[in-house]
Length: 238
Image (cartoon, rainbow, N blue to C red; front, side, top):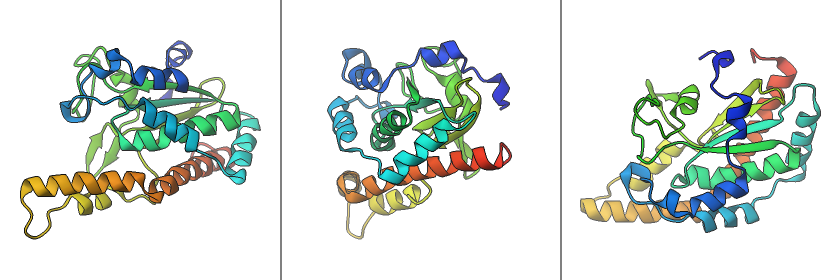
C-alpha cells in the first residue's frame, strides 16, 4: 500500500490511547467483554502489563541511540502501536516500547486491533468489523509463508509530520517463534491430545516467564533502533 494513502491522519493518530490509558482500558468491563484470542473469554492482563513496564529497562546504548535518532532531522517523533493484551508478544513488547518512547521523548498512541469479535480474517475490513481498527491493520499485515496475517504488536514509527519511517511486527528476528512454539506444543510419545495441550500450555507459559522473553524484548528494541538508523542514514530505499 502507498504510504501516502494511509488512513493514519493526525486526527486518527491523536485518537489512540497513551500507554497508561491502554493499561487502564485493558482491565475495564468494556474490554473484558470483548472476545479474546480464538473467541475465548479475556482475562484482566492490566497487572501483567504494569509489572512488565516496571521491570522494563533500556540499557545506556539503547537510551543514547533513541535520543540520537529523535534529534535527527525527520527522525522518529510519533509511534503508533496496534495491540491486544491476549498476545504474549504484546505483553512482552508494548511495555518495552513505552520505555523506548519515553527515553526518546516520542509520542505514543495505542490502538486495539479488534472490535467486539476476535478477527480471524487474513484480510480484515471495516465492512466486516466496523468497530475495529481493521483499516489501520490492513496497512501493516504480516506476509509469511505465502499468506497474510494480522500479527501484533505492530509499532509504526513516524516523523513529527506523520511521515512513515519504519514498522516492527510481532517479534524480533532472533526469536524463531513458529519453530519454538511448534516444538513446545508438539505431541510427545504416549501423550493424549488433552495431555499434549496441557503440557504445551504449561511449557509456553514457562517460556514467557523465563529470561528469554526479556532477551527478546531487548532484541526487539535493538532491531527497531537499527532499522531506524538504517532508514535515516541510507534513505527510504534501504
